[in-house]
Image 1 (spheres, one colour):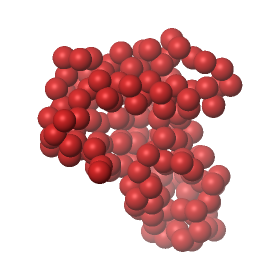
Image 2 (image 1 turned 180 degrees about the vertical axis):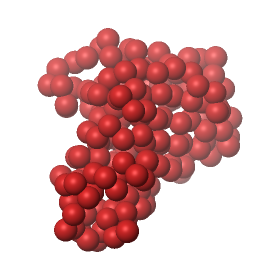
Image 3 (image 1 turned 90 degrees about the vertical axis):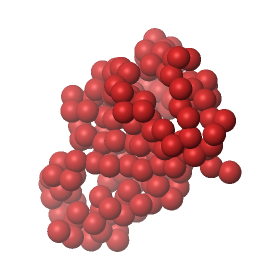
Image 4 (image 1 turned 30 degrees about the horizontal axis):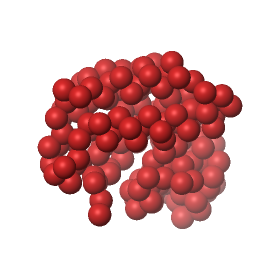
Length: 166
């Protein structure tokens, strides 16, 4: 059973620029399976949004907090080579118990220009953290080699890679 649905979006103009500069000869069918391209996407200063729409009625903010505490913590350690409790705390503190996330509500996780990671719950901005490491870690959870949602990853990579053919 899925707890939420995932959609991902990226600034098309910035993705096109990345593709034209670094991957001009790659057709979309090859580009979306290219590890270097995916790595470049997770490291690029491109506005990207991961939208989670809650579909399970008993889903709560504590679950989100615990999941991000574990998985983002692991990614931070993977990319930094050590624990980064202060950065993890600055991110997970955005998910306060007072936020209600009933079925149908959304959580938007957005990498803004300048590597500012913003969180909006139910359309309301709840906070931001400026950190390239945090942005890369969270994006890797959704578009990296072992994503939370493989279908959403494949749809996203298909769409951004198709910009190579435009």
